[in-house]
Length: 464
Image 1 (cartoon, rainbow, N blue to C red):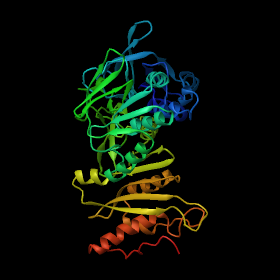
Image 2: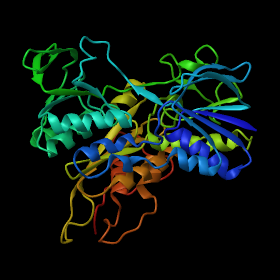
Image 3: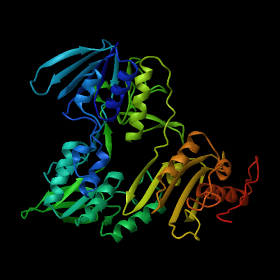
Image 4: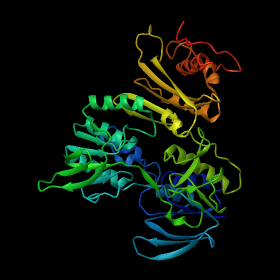
């Protein structure tokens, strides 16, 4: 079988590796327009604040490694067209300019995404930087070495992490967000407000409800940001306003979502049975709602790529869906999230509710402990767990993984309230904090007259 993989970031690299591991006889060709593979863009902020010494360490594979596995690797090659009917791709060698045609039996689209470039005046100013790939990461680092006042436009994960990294390295940081909260896709308004306060305490100036409408350079070399709330002068700006799928090659040949994301079935197959897609170019099933969603996370991309590698050989590996579980570290705090926030659940017309646990992660009689806040979201009609966000100086990211499993398995607040978890004072209370927050939800429903038909859960107990 001849397989062509278009793109070699996370999904493309893992798909090629897995295919050659399970079926080493496969003729695998990878076309990648850049000369570097598998760059972990989540490491850019770590490089900015010195936690990672070399940006090159953020590559976990290379063309040479894939060639050693048996792949034909063509970096600096841009796929210009795909003919899905005739199983052909037209490719340009970006070094020589030669254009040629190649054929495939199965095609894997791993083209990823591109940073959204807002259609605003001055976006092409040399002091306005984007963040996604290795080259852009180098530009951001060089700007941080040269400039002191830096604006962050957009307050998702990347923007928030950049704000922290630059504040820690002594920069004057301003963050502009068009909406009324930061990290909108990951946490609710209440936790967002806490994170805004944390950033402000470390010198980050945050402007909510400030949509940037233009960039202007003045005669003194300053960069001026135009917003409806006024104009602001900085030395440089980093735009982190989201991503758009690189799916143009297949438009009109397979079904795509209205924003351009490739639609795939439970086996990562597009509506053309010989074309598969994985990673940021596609939409996948979001388990809290059961519908499709766009989740541009490396964790999703690598899992999808493994499935593609098996399914092109008809090995029937179904996709289990995603909860979009993720976490970041800010000024010593772990912030972890999975599933839906209350706000997003209500927007989807789900009869959702939220409970909040505020306590400690282990008994207060221990020599040390840390404060912990958990927000648990659930469906009041079915009692199913829908999502959670948590924050603590203690490492609680793995607890988000536990909630992710509960969502994937359709567990209820009743299940979570009594699920078996260890107790030892070094690690937690007699009831783990995930038990406790679920018990709060059970109590809330009981008080509203919505007792569980299965059993009456124990009340809130966080110690003996």
